[in-house]
Image (cartoon, rainbow, N blue to C red; front, side):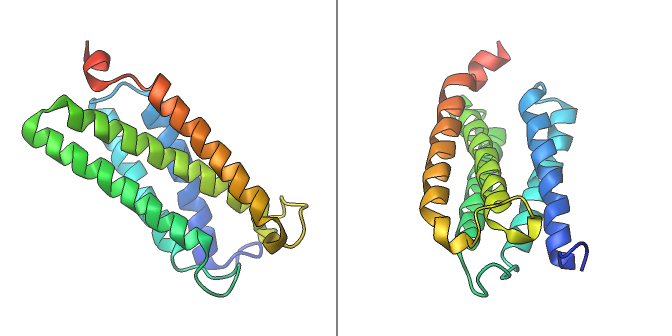
Length: 167
């Protein structure tokens, strides 16, 4: 145990921080460069690892819970984003590249949703003063709906289509 966290929990936090930083870097940097591809691979690997560790942690309820469902959704958006990129490499259809960009951006939104929820509901992290996490799920659901809608709005309104970004 590291500071109250199991080894899996500590690995989960470490790869989570890597994914948060890597995702921010990928969003900020020029797309299609060797640096983008490298940092993007680090981000994708971090997402695989964080979801793998999430699926093996049962400390909160002792059984599968909402975080396990979130991990599966996050893995699905990662897969959709990577498959769209693979398709784009084969076809060069700009719609596939747009799909890759939107799915990966929404994957990052999902990462932030999980991170903020974890900070608020996990008593081991010592951030929440809300007491028993089971008593404030309605607040967590409302907060995540708001985060999702805000993230989706940012992706739709601020993420330039691939054709425009290439021009």
